[in-house]
Length: 539
Length: 81
Image (tube, rainbow over the protein chains, first blue to last red):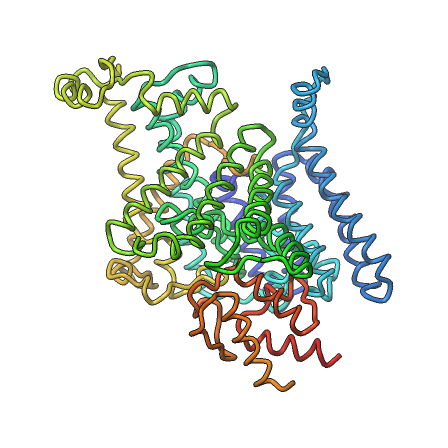
């Protein structure tokens, strides 16, 4: 059941909410069990077989968690073995469904084998579900989680709002909330929840989908060997970046909003990522719960272990401005590359995702090197001030756009074809009416004679949407900031410096003037005509 | 070693790590209060603290320490045992 479908918005959610609050504080246990039943129904809706696929994973994980809690430190070997087996099981589960074909392809390419590729059914949300389970195992082993009961566990792994595509939430974040959940009606939860939910829907159906419709033809063309002209290629790249942001952040808003309808606060996933002024900053604003997961479970343990080993050998470690090159390469560059390449292929099994991850890895390494070295090598180069900040932003933005070409492209070849178009190598096309005006400029830029962009109205639509999208993502506060006075998401706060005049002017409150926001709801619902699924539901 | 002494050595370690003699830590100091104390610096700092005090932190414990006070508590509980 898609979040952006009539049956979800007008039947499923109202029914779940109605029964949940009807049971209320008097039947608290039943209300919580109802959420589990409703979530199972939600998951089974698409393909009932999904439930059967995911059931063994839930069962095995629960068994391992119980075992870890029972044996804890008294029998370290058994505990370690169970932990390793649990992690291996989850990775194998994910690996079989998601990466089997990729490994066979690599083998066919590199070793010249000829394995046949079978189409496997990818259980919905498997990448996200697997991550949450791994996180729980690690947290239990680390002693951060000390009690897990079957019903709590079932609610944690099945709770429908973050089930399919996150935010990736920790057991220790949800459990204290479930423990005090009483089914009592609170108007604030409902107002904030609905506002988030419908803003998310608006982002998806009013921005992401129309932009996608305009740029998909270019992407379809490069997938079959097309060579897009300059402006088409840029429109495809910029449009896709906006589509991905509106789609995934819209989905995340809807998930956070849906959870809030039951009084549950989820962690936030986006914080105006396209305003980032460096790539480290970007990853602290984009898919935040993934960054957090990767830092916590891959990057930090790796770096800590390596730092300990070097420190024990009395070798230099990372130490601000005095960091040596070897320390930097071993302790920062290497773990960063490993983490980001894994992040890339986590998104999808394909070479282009590997390149996407590697590109971001390199960018992060360069960013870290700059941070460590700039104060020593270029002490006079400032990174504050309007011009410097604009330059930093532009560089970051451009890099993100280029890296996302690999994320969207169906193959490496298609990605390079689009990038080639973006360099102007395939010339420029313009609507007939613009050609006479633009000719001198293009000549000055050294681009060859313009062809014709056949439909002038399409040209205006594409660039109009891109301009509108950029104004929204760069010029406006995000919905969490607007709702900041009402705890929109777990741990979300606006720093005093972030309270701009614009934000103060648009800060949300449950006042009549904000009822105008229901227009967002109406527009969102009316735009539901064409159903398209969320990009991240495929991961 | 009492809490004040431990705090003094933490300050000293951080001064070395950041190569900045002006750094002084208090129990309420958090990473965001000190320029250059990012996640990488934190790892170096923590490993240096481990070495100096002969203790070992779990990754989860490192992530759970939100200010210098948390670290003082953690060191106290580990060295007491």
